[in-house]
Image 1 (cartoon, rainbow, N blue to C red):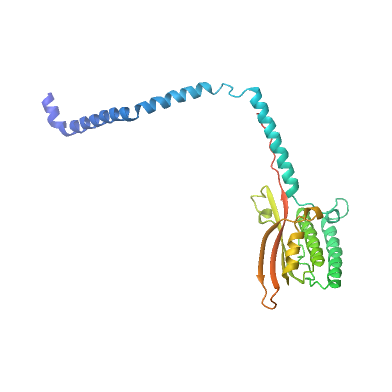
Image 2: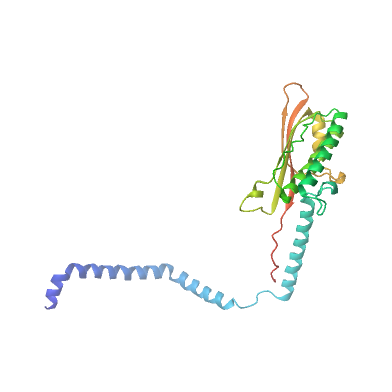
Length: 259
């Protein structure tokens, strides 16, 4: 079979391949002209960066400054954490070796409830008899401890209500952080929510909110939400829903890296 026979038999295939080769060559020339300099520049920069990976870029003075800044930031974080985290008063803390956590908590509830109901009755403050506390069906010390912290908030707020002259506390609700029982675990900030619903004249409610933020008086209770509505029965009466937070901070510490 001579070349003419090969050409006749494979003419279409040879033409297709030749056209493809021409398109490829033309494309290569076009790409090189348009992007060639950029590609060469990028390759040069890549080689330069690879060679400089093992080169120390910052001297001892810069490293020392970075360490100082890092230490200052860590101290600031500690101070902010101490300011934000809730601190229970001693009488609301559960003590190891003093009986079960549940036994301590129920004794605390009885003592606080009797004291607050007596105080409220003497000062004409209407108060839910159960203080919004649910019967706990658990022996987990960490759950009981958080309810004891919430009870501390309830005690503080009720006593402030008496001092400023709030008329009525309609309800109290305690909710642990939704992530507390999550399989993903708690994040860095844990929030127990204690929600009060008040009905009173406006001035005592405003004063109550101000007093709960008085750090000098030992209160400074973070507020997540406040809803105020005018009551229908009296012109000066308002209905208020206020959610206070018990904040716990969880630091997921890792070993400091050398700078």
